[in-house]
Image: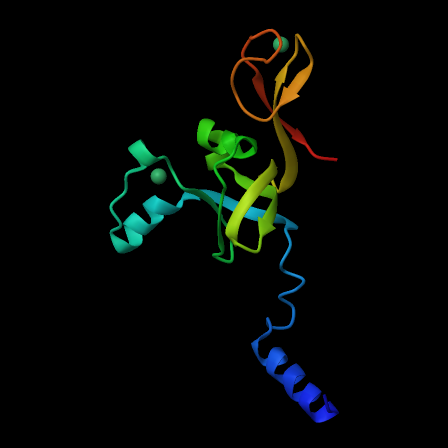
Length: 154
Ligand SMILES: [Zn+2]
Ligand SMILES: [Zn+2]
């Protein structure tokens, strides 16, 4: 194979290969997203008359940044507090998460809040068992209800 031919093949492959930079985006990334929680379905109902069915299908919660970007939350256990506790939907949050090349959804790692401009850690605590958890409900040890905490982050 002559070098001209080789060069031609290389050129053809380059033409159909992914855009520069896509390689770096082909794996999960850790990000922090600051914003408020919205239900994307209800927002699209308001804007475009999408017919909602949140009661039967569940809310499609998403973080909306001040710049107007929208990141839907994967409906997984680590994200549960937004569905279960309205305080998470009333506060401005910092969502620490992973984001994937397949889409804009966030895998929530943890939620923090902004209170008086200060970053706060959020959790639920059983002060009998001294166990911290990420969603409301009975303590996994003693079954007493866990109590919401919002404490300044260091
Ligand atoms: Zn909804
Ligand atoms: Zn307990």
